[in-house]
Image 1 (cartoon, helix red, strand yellow):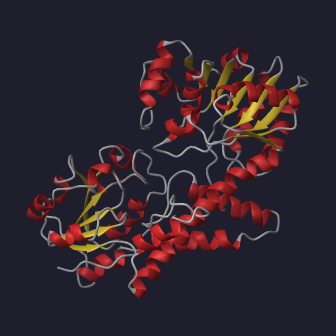
Image 2 (cartoon, helix red, strand yellow):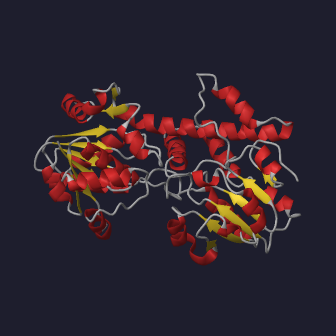
Image 3 (cartoon, one colour):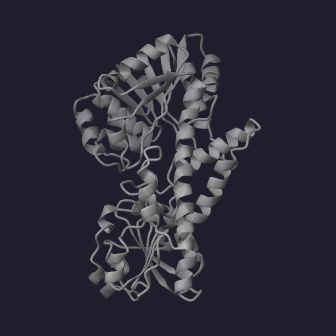
Length: 437
């Protein structure tokens, strides 16, 4: 089948590459000429494990194409996926201007029946809005489908090629048949395709992400209480997660959630609720708790230095909002770095993947190191913000030689408590006792 993907961000590029891998001819459209030219030459514009190999394979197999010309791609395809940004506005609502602008363009350009697929995360009722915009521009029949993505950054290729389920919102039998055909390679292997109405499909994505945000935040609250009463959150987490009604995933405490989805989707669902005179009180509390959790270790760093960190050098390991991605949107590292700089500290950071994105944002406000150990040179303390695998088993003897103070503030609970203790480090993590040497 011929398919067009409008938008080549994380969702669009991974979706397009996956659909090409399944044997379709896929035309990826983006307005950024430089980006499109790079992709034509085999340059993957985002970091996502295992994406480049699949990306290049499908370009070479002539199943994956790139263009800035929407009309050209539209004429080639029966199905058009919209994978466009829906950033939060000042009031938290999802900005649908990109989605509706492309819907308008499609309406003006259509010459035959199309299925328009909302892949972007959008508020309830967006399919109706897209349908209205396109319908105002053409008399040609078309259908609008909601098909939310459930991709984890860092595991997007794995999730895209091995989905747990496919959710399709449509009131059209014809569109359902076409979507079933696209996803047949998955359903043939037992992956369920769940058909529902468009509004339920749209809400499913927000509900899923918001629930996970609540789960993370609840565990962080439990972790903070563990510290008050002398319990160990790692043991509590194992005891809770062993209950199959709860499960082990998303029970790891840390310095809050970030990224492109959870913060935006929680805000958007809260705002959508208010628009319909409904208060998502649990989500409002989740937002408040997460905001504080992201910088909860700042006060611990200040306490260690007697209340004043001005002039101190703080090494930061990790800048991405999570491991295995270069995405720094809503990253806890940035919140902490901002406060550290405000308080007069010097920041030396290491993240080989996300560094360039932070440089675009912060420039020379902080220093950047080529290795994780270079960042520790004469550092007064180490702050761990991202759970990159390379940080899991460091050389503590080398760390001790490089640092002024053997002090680690771990926002991701990277080490068993006995490891820093045996190496003579002061070690502060989340929801566990503080190691004082």
